[in-house]
Length: 65
Ligand SMILES: [Zn+2]
Image (cartoon, rainbow, N blue to C red; front, side, top):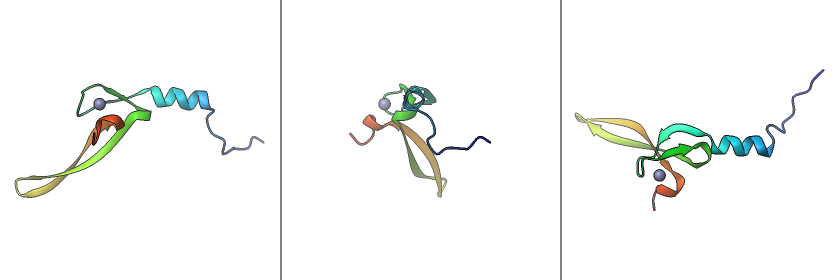
């Protein structure tokens, strides 16, 4: 019987995944973001007197610099 290993994907596969695009654009530079680069930030804003949270995505390098 095949046994599930905890090894998971090899590095080539991981690298490929890291570089594939998430479909999100950076809130700062408006460029596409790859999986390895994505940073999600939860932002809470007041809307009509009620707190409303939403996610903002950045490149790691674009956030907080
Ligand atoms: Zn960016």
